[in-house]
Image 1 (cartoon, rainbow, N blue to C red):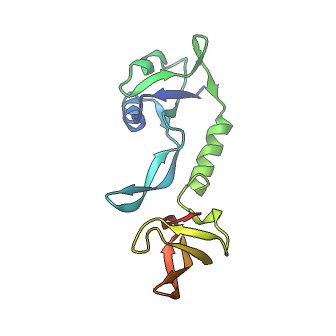
Image 2 (tube, rainbow, N blue to C red; image 1 turned 180 degrees about the vertical axis):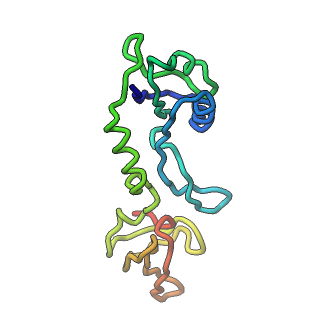
Image 3 (cartoon, rainbow, N blue to C red; image 1 turned 120 degrees about the horizontal axis):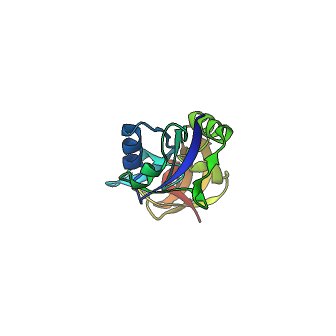
Length: 166
């Protein structure tokens, strides 16, 4: 009977462990989420492990030995209780897969913490370090901020990730 087990990987080696475990014939699941990261002065969306340094391997212990997993390149250890690996319920894996498909774990929207009327600081771009008042939340992670510029109030539409609460 196939069961899922938690595998602890070496730092930033989840993809390596995944590839090597698949090559050895194990069924592997690495839950991921989308995050916004800065790279070369640009904000890009990247896929990152939901649980850094962990993934799940599914196999039947009566047909496939689990101890070779420990010596797989990229793997640190198998999560065990005593000397036996502990199974993760299938329901947990199914819920994780469902939520991942639905985008529940994605961390790409920054505007959720803002409210119209809040004072904000522009963190990047042409208006960097300016303080303004949030006047509108728009679709696709855009916000409109009222800034004082050359003695006038100017509306600026910005990416929500470029704005921070003061």
